[in-house]
Image (tube, rainbow, N blue to C red; front, side):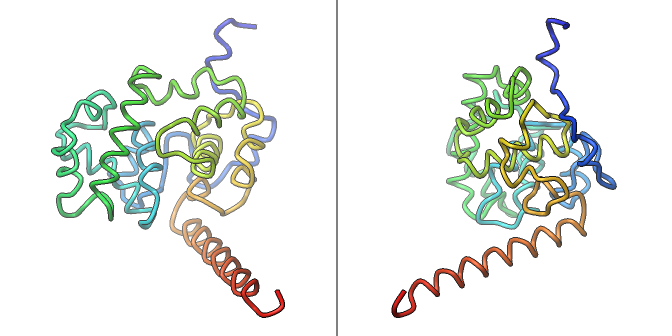
Length: 224
C-alpha cells in the first residue's frame, strides 16, 4: 500500500448509493445563490463557516454568509488566518452591515473568529486538514465535534455533507454520521442538491417539529 494512501479520503463500498442528479463533488446548492454556492463548492472553509452559521436562520441565509464575509473583506474566499486576526469589534461590524450575515451578527462574528483561530492553531488554517488524514468516520466526527460551535448534531450533519457531496468518505463515515448518513434521505443540508430536495428537507423538519410538539403536549396531559 502507498504510504500516502491514508491522506486521501477513501470511498465506502456504497458510494454509488449517494449519486444524485446535479450533485457532484465540489458543487453545492445550499445557498440557492450561484455566487455563494460557487464559493461553497471550492472553499471548504466557506462550507464550514456556513455550517456554523446554520442555526436560528433559514439555511440559505446561513450559507450565503461566507460569500458575504469574503466580499466585504475584499477577498475571493475566506481565509482562516485573516479572519482570526481581525479586530473583534470591526469584524462584528462587518457581519452587522445590512443585509446582516446572521440574525445575531455580533455573537456569530465571535464564533466565526473562534472557529478560524482554532483552525489556525490546530490545522495550519486549512479546513481540509481536519479530514485529510482522518483514519475513520469516528475519528473525523470527533475532530468535528472539537471545533468551536460544533455540537454532535452539527458535526454529524457536516460529516454527512462531506461524505454525500464532497467525496470525503473515511471508513465508517455513514455510521458515524448517524441518521444523517443514510442514503437517499432528506433530513439535513447534507441531502440538499437543489430546490426540490430543499423542499423535501423542509417538509421533513416540519413533520419532525410537529411530532415533537405533539409528544410534548401528550406528556402534559393529566394522568401522564
